[in-house]
Length: 431
Picture 1 (tube, one colour):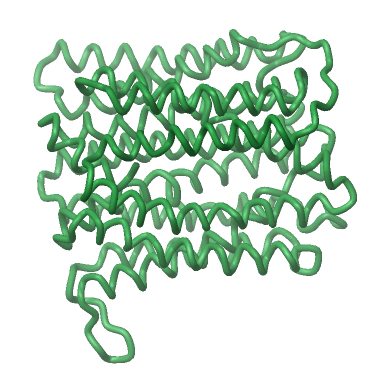
Picture 2 (tube, rainbow, N blue to C red):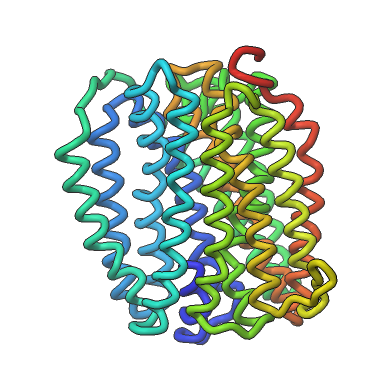
């Protein structure tokens, strides 16, 4: 999808801010759906929840492929993300149920599979966009989704369901608050009158008010969508803070890297997809190693080292093209970007398995719910990052300078998460 963003923008002739909503709305919908699906999965069972999510993803992809304008495309991406948001919580719940005696390693290895998709996706996406246009990216999802749906029906066990309520109002409040915040950030790019600034102020106040109502509601409802017990403990608070910044620094902004490669390094669509492959390779290598040795390494050390490498890679991205040298030799555009995203991938691969497991052992019976909440904070960080980044790019005017501002700011934010990392559990044995 990241590879298709720039051709979508030029196809509809819209600004970078509006084009950013193609990814931003997905992040927003994902943010609201992950904790809901985590709870639904705990209540109704893993298999039906997972299959429903796959079906929604297929429907959203079909609508996106046929979208006649940006409004319809954004709406269909919203539906697509309602399904996509359920993949991780339901799948982690399935893995946790199937491997109770080796949960940490199983979840870590499960996470290490993602980079394979990260390798195939951008390369395939770049080829599809070059050969068939951006709509081909969505058409590809349909047969792939139908295959997953068939395999899920044949291979997954039904499991048990529990009769408990779903906090629909809590989910709507999460989505409403984030929508107000993201709309306010996006409108800042067009604010040229007192009336527009008044609307932005109203939206920001609405986000704050909804947040207060949400906190009060979650404290009173019998089965909250965001369990206060999970939110209140010091390790959970630290993990949620870290995941929000992590989402902003390595999930949200990486969606804009193909645009950066095309606009600043003047690469083709296919090359902008290929440039993400080293990141995925680095992620696969380090995430597999960390998963295998997590019991020995613990949680904190991989997260600290991985976050440091991610911060360094963002600083390197801020260096002007042609200025990066390795062993005294100047690197050309493609080589420089490949090296930088490889460093990013090595760091993300170190941090991901440990941060995925860091609080699950505190409540292993709530693995899907905890994963949903963790994912909510990550995706919220990614959604805010995309919206804020596109706003900076629009306001600065110079794409290269705007990206430098974004990269340096996110690098500093990631470095500032060290206290939160140190407040997380040290290892499965020493909480």
